[in-house]
Image 1 (spheres, rainbow, N blue to C red):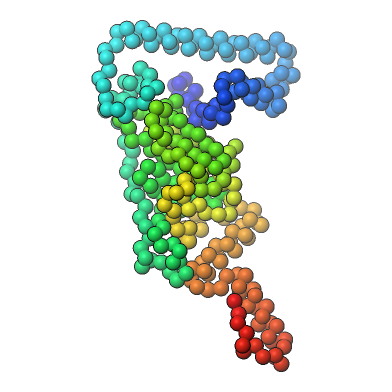
Image 2 (image 1 turned 180 degrees about the vertical axis):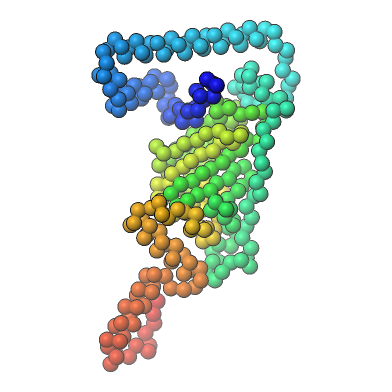
Length: 304
């Protein structure tokens, strides 16, 4: 039970650690956080703060030494682990080698890969969508090596590891940047590695491990657009085929909601070959002008 509680924040902590070049900068960030956001240094006597720090340090050092000794004692009596296929990661531990036995193979459900939109399903004005993918139920796409869903504000990316052993957070290598994403297993080539379709808010990015699948939650920088894909160069979905009701418009503030509703209305109008809200506004203005000036001849004027 203790191990599962400790591992609860592994994904978030690993993400933070990956943004630092070593343990010293990581400690500096952590203790700086305590200084800026808490009264750890000033709320008690100096000696009390130091005692608390050293007690926790000694506690975990003792646990680490005990675990190391237990592993060494176990290794001296342990039978050799049968060699498995080359799917094992290079930094595998004794426990990881045991977990790599085929009997513990995780069951990852297969997802149907998204298909291209049939040309017959294209409406007037959608010629540019030819060859693009039909969005899945979450307004995203299912690829052979990852899948994603989205709202106007947020993305969820799922990257499964199709290996014969149970993957732990420490086995994963996840690098998240504002315009780049890399996900894979240590000692292996990344499953996905490339520039993002658009910019994200790095401070809001999170990931965790779920049944041998890395699940990432990414917040869009621009919250009034649909993404065609996650990684630039991957086949894009037709954003004209997304379902706006999945975007949780009720969660947006009034100004943003009005902007998004206008954008979606114009999108539907264009798909149907009808005038957009701006076109309609211009047309209404011209009709009022024509009524106010019946003496003028507008028969040779071209509109639009």
